[in-house]
Image (cartoon, one colour):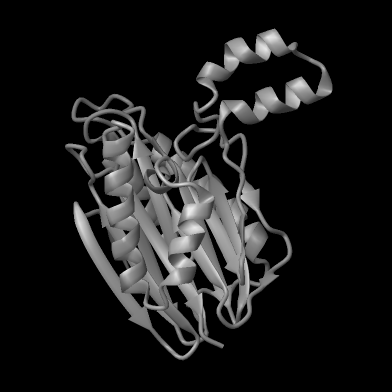
Length: 267
């Protein structure tokens, strides 16, 4: 069980129940601020992706600390009877840890990180998240986003729907719609996503954890098409990396850090 924060790294694992691949790349950035970690044990699997933010070295420090804390607290060897409740407790404790990071002068670093976490036990899927990293589930020809993006647009959409703001006010504010409203390191963790009942997984289902360095460049249809058209996860990751690289050049958007974990259910 180990956390990773590398400029480029690919790890593949497999057992009788799960195929697993984790891939991370720094992209065109100067620093890798994504971190990930995982643990496989018999019929259980734990996977984590964190995307840090907060200035030079801050984001990397936040994501590394979060992954280490989450790996330790969610260790599959721990006996946990209520996973959703334990998720909430763990996210809150990790939020406080990240918010307490200090710089070399002893001042608060002001760093933070998103987090998406899954635990699979005997094909029962539990997840939690804070921020705008995502979890997708593919079954057959359908892909759903299991998590909600905790961004300002979420609040604006609710206010517009309820009539609290006008269309003009929405249009003015939505330019800031991608700003995070919840993340580890906020110090009070205002919003989380946790499924209270396990989601049952079946043969050939696919679970994806990813930082925004994937979906900023590829649509959900493109992501699903790649995963479904490649039976080998290594080939799928190669295709994803290549397509994101081409997309970033096409739209003239510097390629961000990207971390993707793909889990395929074997039976």
